[in-house]
Length: 143
Image (tube, rainbow, N blue to C red; front, top):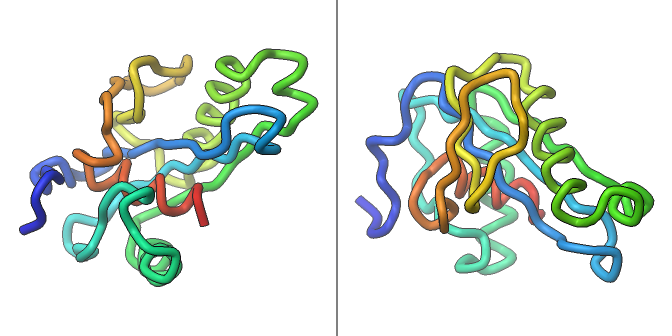
């Protein structure tokens, strides 16, 4: 068992959502949503910032192969300029969740606020270091 991550949170149809890139200087905001398969654990999941590039790339492939579903979305620089960074991030997170081919029963969002979604959601501060599905989303968004 890894320290920090709560693997009891790998439940059926719970999506983890995270983002990378905050603002026009960084380019687009990229977000990902992931529903992990409780029957196919992924060892080594952690906050993407705590992993080497090589480890992120290895996990990127494994997440895509083992997750029930995943989706990567973005808000481009023009949307960031038009909406502001917070609203553009929320829009990209909404796109990621709506892009999932399976509707989650709950979306756990990294941070202290949630986008308006058609499914129940809850924010998790530092969720990428606590919730496996959010950690997986952070890896997909970063790679």
